[in-house]
Structures are given as C-alpha cells and as structure tokens.
Amino acid sequence: MRIVIAGGHGQIALRLERLLSAGGHEVAGVIRKPEQADALREAGAEPVVLDLESASVDEVAAVLRGADAAVFAAGAGPGSSVERKDTVDRGAAVLFADAAERAGVRRYVVVSSMGADTAREGDEVFDAYLRAKGAADDYVRGKAGLDWTVLRPGMLTDDAGTGLVRLEASTGRGPVARDDVAAMLAELVETPGTAGLTLELVGGAVPVAVAVRDVAGN
Image (cartoon, rainbow, N blue to C red; front, side, top):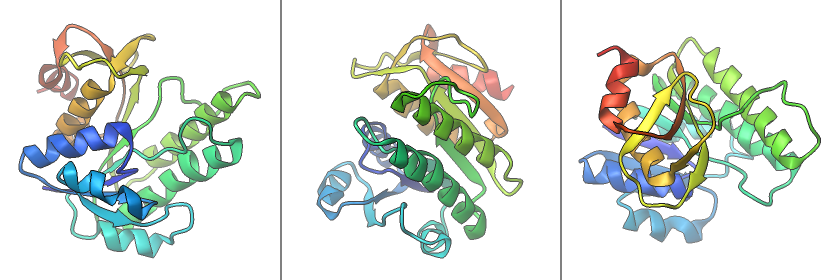
C-alpha cells in the first residue's frame, strides 16, 4: 500500500512511518519544514514539504493521488495559539479530507483526541483544541466519499508500548503509549471493516490486532 500521512514529523507519525515502512508499505509524510525531512527518511518515509495551513485542495490532492490510504496526524502542537488550533487541528484536517476525496483515496484514518467535541465549554487553549478536533471529526464523518475511521486516544505517554490496549466506542479516560497508538493506526489502515467507526483507545489487556478484529466484527 501507499500511505500518505499528514503531520509526518509528529511523535506518533514518525513511529507509524517506521512500522509501515518495516511492513513493506510505501509511506510519504507531509511536513511543513524542510529541515524535518531527514527524520522522515530515517523512519523510512518519503518527505513531502507542503504547508497545510496555506496549500490549496488541488496541491494536497496532487500529493495524495495514487495513494491507497491517508492518515491525518497533524496538529498545531503544545504551546500553539487558539488561532492555530483552528487553522491546523480543524482547518488542515478539513483540507486533507477534501483533498483525499478529490484524489479518490477512500481509506482515511484520523488521529483525534478523547473528549473532542464542538460543544466543549471553556476558554482555555485546550478547550479550543477539543472544539477544533470535534469540528474536524464531524466534517470527516460527513464525507460520503471516504471510508473513515476516527481514533481518539487517551492521555499520550512516552512509555514503551506493550501492544495491549482497550479499543471501544467509549473506554473511559486513561493513558496510552504513543507506541501503541502508532501500532493501532497501522492496524486500522489495513482494516477497512472499521470504516464508519469512532473509537477511543487507552492501555488495556487486549493485543492490538485482536482489538481491531473485535470492533471490525471479524
């Protein structure tokens, strides 16, 4: 498979690129800064420099054309402003979804966040982030041209992954290692039976592949 990842230099994305590349897939990562390219090459991914805050749908669709799947893993990141939560966490997600549809890439996996909700109350930056992610998720879930899966991890940690998770429509809050989120994304990309599902992910007791088969009904 050829898989294109938005936010290719992110902590989860780099882990995912290593896994997919090791699994024999052709991987491209969309990045904003040229100096991030070497890290992607080391992870086995082709770097594509394109700013999703300013690119057109046609420019992004050109990158996606010919891909078998797309993963949206971009984010404004910690310390960013409320404005960039809107332009990246919502706006770039909307753009990437539109571009995937235009390019004919049906399989589309979104890295969201537990608690994402347009009705989230509060004036903190994190509240704005969850509203932006909620709006992006709602938009993607309305795209008839995409076989989408929305993944909402719990509190992310840098602990070593265990490969054991809890994956359900509603898990309740809890931590999950970035390693395990990446492993889950790699499994979801190749499991079209999860299309149309919004899933929460925390650490648990079920192997990643088994958890995905369970929710896919396989």
